[in-house]
Every structure is written in C-alpha cells, then in structure tokens.
Amino acid sequence: DNGKLRMIPSVVSRFREASACAPRLSRAPLLEAFEACADMLNKLQSGLGDPLKVNTCKLRRSTASNDEADYELWLLSELPVHVKNGKKGFVDDSAWMGNLWLAWTLEFIVEFFAQIGSGSD
Image (cartoon, rainbow, N blue to C red; front, side, top):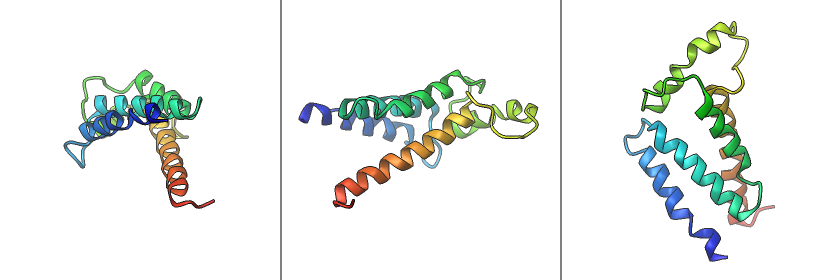
C-alpha cells in the first residue's frame, strides 16, 4: 500500500545527505540513513530491516572516535582495537564488523529488489 512507500523519499534524502561530499561519506547522516532504511523495510515486511538495525547498533556502540565526522576516517579510528586482537579478524560489536555486515545486507537487499523489479525468479 502507498503508506509503506511514503518513507522512500525520506530514506533517499538521508543517503543523499550522507553522500553530499562524495566520494567521502558523512558518518552521522549515513547511520541515520541505515536506520531509516531499516524502518522502511520493516514496514514492508516485519523483520526485513532487522539486520540493518542490528549492525547499525554495532556501529553506534563501537569504540571508533565520535569526534570524526568522515565515515572512512571514523572506521580507521577504531583500527587499534583490531590490532590488539592480533589481526586475527574483526572484533565483533565493532564499527568494522557492523560495516562488513551492512555491506553484505545492502548488497542482498539491492539484488533482491532488482530481481523483483525485473520479474526474475
């Protein structure tokens, strides 16, 4: 129904704000965009946006510097946490792990909707 689709312009606007200085991304608007996207997906189907929410929470709980507005530099500010781990992999509940899972989730969602839009199985 149309009520479920009314959120799309708001989500798009938030992603545009986050990428206004492309190729750089602004951290705060990007996190808000992920959360708005999750809310929109959950309106379409309960639980569909939950992976975005869970991993955005990882970003918000991370030890990355809140003083850093640039998303890439913010991620890099958390690097010492992963170095302490002996570089054996990303520490869970970190910005790096949240970023990794968000990328995979968004890749899946984009492909899913592209196939629906094209009529593919």
